[in-house]
Image 1 (cartoon, helix red, strand yellow):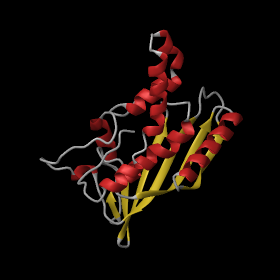
Image 2 (tube, one colour):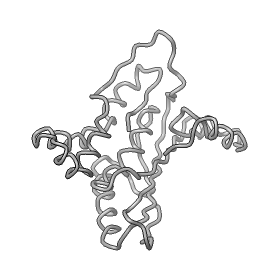
Image 3 (cartoon, one colour):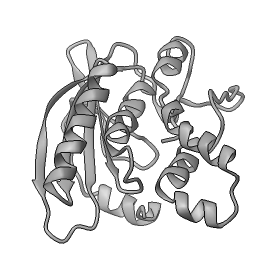
Image 4 (cartoon, one colour):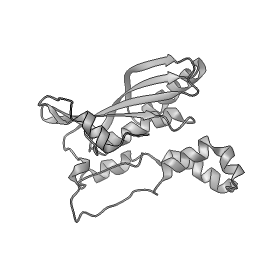
Length: 208
């Protein structure tokens, strides 16, 4: 569960940043931005705590989506893996390597360990990219048109269908609907849409 905005604001207000930081810790913005010469280094971290199945895919695409909504192309990834077992650590690493390669993202570091007593594996990933033109969440203006590229709620639906399949069946969810809901997991990427929209958008946000 995320901290309430008022508590988070109080904590973040005590943090100092240097003059190269364009966007630092802030409620409402999904990424940090550091000025590097004439370009912007965009950085975002995300924990994967709500899903167990396909955790490697989520560990890559969730932070990559946030980088893409800044107008940058996600290029680099670091993942901290707190695994419930050695087998889970190996499986998660292989998944991360597979999907990062597929998306043209280089895994440049991180940390992997087997954490005793952990009921399931948890991953926290940091993605980075370079932007020439910066798009921020706060760039939205009154009168802007709002577009959604896919259906609402597809990530949460996919997690429920994949991680709580037995519960869905017991509650009477039809098999065809359950299978369709599972497939939503492969539709949560916004990388292509963000690359196109970056030329025109005043603000972008992903649903992951």
